[in-house]
Amino acid sequence: MSFDAFLHWLNDTPFSIVMRESLWAEPVMETIHVLTLSLFLGFVVLLDLRLLDVSLRRKRVSEVFEQLNPGLFSGFAIMIVTGVLLFVADPVAFYSTLFFKLKMIMLGAAIVNVLLFNFTLGKRMMEWDHAPRTPFGVKLCGAASLLLWVSIVAAGRGIAYTLPPP
Image (cartoon, rainbow, N blue to C red; front, top):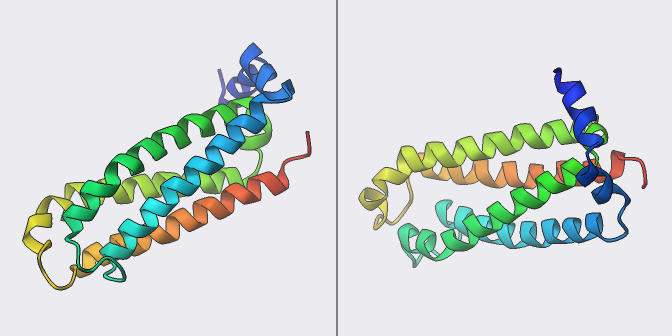
């Protein structure tokens, strides 16, 4: 089965049809997605600004991580689930937009950025946690994260403006 055939099959599933045709299903998922995005993005901005030495400088990075990670991970999980449900509502239309493809590429890059940080610089956090400034590589990861997440949000808005009205 080709990817295009899979998208058309997914589009014709009962769940997809319900999501697309229900008066409430898609708007409720969209609302949860956007509210969770707002929560998640707030935590990301706080964390990244700390990595960049712009804010929360009196707190150790490890302390900021400890306080924000539960909200980050919960928000990300809910955001992914609601995003997938929104995609399933109209997979052919979503996949046909340039903004959706860009959003997915940047989402992948953001995940890679987090993994690279956690498996490299983050493993040595105790070495630089008490330093007056975070290392350059840490700042680079924070800046990349901010840029990627702002771009992901912008691409998400682009999807909304390129899809035909329901």
